[in-house]
Image (cartoon, rainbow, N blue to C red; front, side):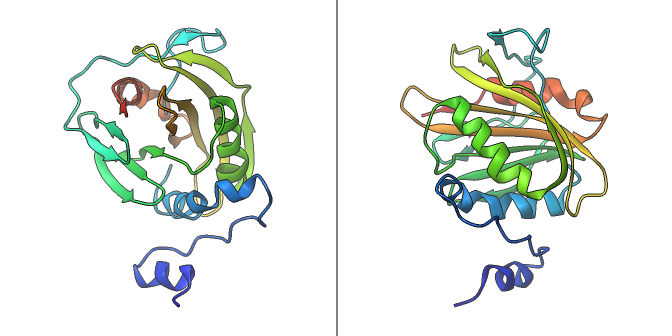
Length: 210
């Protein structure tokens, strides 16, 4: 059987670093970690809470521009903002990466289950942190999408293996009324993500989840 490293090399992709040693909590996230490692290697990479970022229960909104045709990520449909294109899709677990230059939006329907806060910290601890040389993360805070869907949000800045520039971004996690877990991770080189935040807000705000 062909190893993951050999398969990655065959596709012309940089070989991702090995995942952290398995543990009880990590095992739920391992299928997504390798794909995210490749994504960070091949990109140079957010979205921001509307209003005061420390306010609890703030509504996450977008610029209300005209989005593009929906792109499916398993049970999730995301409408790319103008100028954003599909860079990568992975079927299992369902994952999507959109980009506009150096700005990136990664969407994953993870195998992990739990509350939004647990998904948020699971993603940071088991997908972002193992690839980071240095990582600073804010406290999580509750937000609400225009649909009324509650979610949990945190921001981060860090230096990642294989990426020349520090990255800045935010992660939002939610669990739909039907029980579907979804994580959105938007990022760009440090200092540049603010310029795309309205576009990423719109993509998050207009996402439809079965």
